[in-house]
Image (tube, rainbow, N blue to C red; front, side):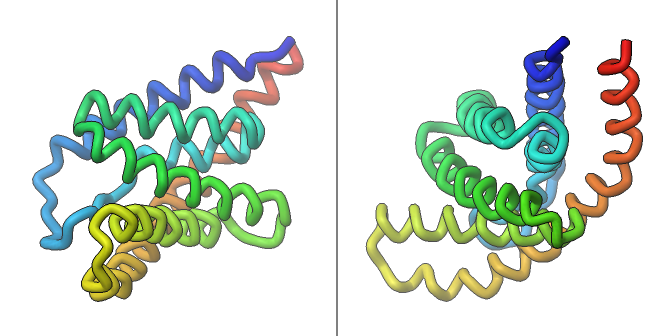
Length: 168
């Protein structure tokens, strides 16, 4: 029996809950666009547990729904650019089997920020955005690594749960 739809629904709900929690946190890093990216945990778990196509749909759905719930149309555009670029690098790295989840997530965090910078450049058309790049790379490394560590900690338990359900 194929439970991918149920797992996708659970991961999307998880992503939305994490986005809501993140919207409540009074964290301000002083740089526009820097967030913890807690909801990306759901996308990383999706890549590893339910498949690439489904995880891409999850990433896009998360960006659009979170944008409508907690942001605006502009946020959706930036979030989609970051989500797709992040997804691509994480999917390639997971598929290669050569990288641990914190490294995969770190690369995803950095690429998410770079996708947003590229989008901002296309909208604003100023090279002044390049000053943000080193800070955004550092933020992506730190937050991505933390999300990857969290994924590493929960992954064995989720694999056991999914394995049990598939054997029923």
